[in-house]
Image (tube, rainbow, N blue to C red; front, side):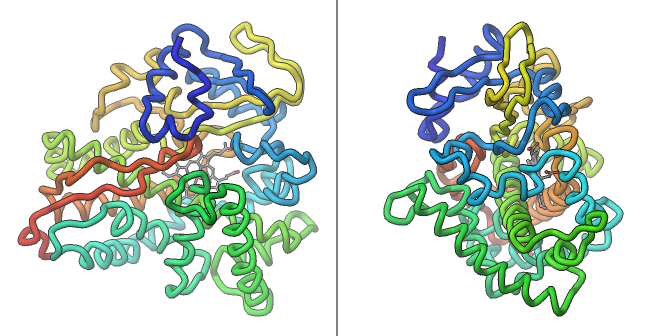
Length: 412
Ligand code: HEM
């Protein structure tokens, strides 16, 4: 059997083929136990139906022990609550409190609430593309794909423009803390801690300002929102700002880059998508299935439970591998084929159930506008080198992707 330990090794996600491991696990041991030295073991969920079952049962599969393997491995069990916000940040809080925090923000992310922002999202996208259009080459990640999600979430949080690059850098340090490119002093721990401290100090000031001078932004919504008769504490507001600045930036960019990468490899599909707007909807869902930007999501079992004949004990960690569920051959026909017209396509790239991604509609909007503009203005974009992958088993990240295109063809 392929070595399942690979799935805990971030290097494997840079140069290895995790899909080969997942394919084998789905076939021979779909609910698979990994024992680890000096760290708690975990169950790997690799099939779609099991992933949905775990996602939709927050009572049995809790988020309050953390949702990512790395962050939950702190040696001191009291540390995660203070350092990582378990039980305070929406994504690591269980019902009923989870739903109450989420209610404060939900209405800002509905398609109806987002629709009026589309012209502005398009204007930002055009500005980003204009900045590289005449060069004939760029780094698709740093110069283009990462810029839009950063700009949009920063505007929603009322982070001023001069600080967007800082938020980009701090986001990379937080989720890319295991990657040498973003590390401080070669230490993942130090890098993550410093980035979190800087983000907290930054938002502490913003929260202070919004407390006395509320606006129509997400920070104000968290500061002034009521949860029944309760308010969020400053620390809870901070953790949720932290979640939004990371969630908003670090995921969509990988869907944009991974989607363009797939389309550049299938020029016929790219041309079809460029000339048939009706395909955009299915094309975007296929990009989300194909890229599955969040590689794993973890839960902790609150009671003993059976899953596909395996006995999960109370306190066990259960890890859902989203890209594996999204290639499950029992659910997706020809799953290793990138098919922009795929239907049905009920992928779980955004998770499922209680914690289903609050930013899904925003991510879809950003993807649609960016692809639309890139396919129109840079129709012959081609890779000028291989994608450089992020050293992470949490995010299917691409750090750099050099591309070329014909400058003459990019006049707006
Ligand atoms: C392609 C882009 C994106 C992907 C693939 C993605 C993926 C996910 C997934 C898998 C979850 C579920 C977590 C769980 O079950 O524990 C989630 C939750 C979340 N996402 Fe996203 N996300 C994306 C974009 C965004 C954006 C743009 C935002 C900005 C607001 C965002 C903010 C959040 C938040 C706040 C949660 C927690 C929701 C909750 O706990 O109820 N995400 N996302």
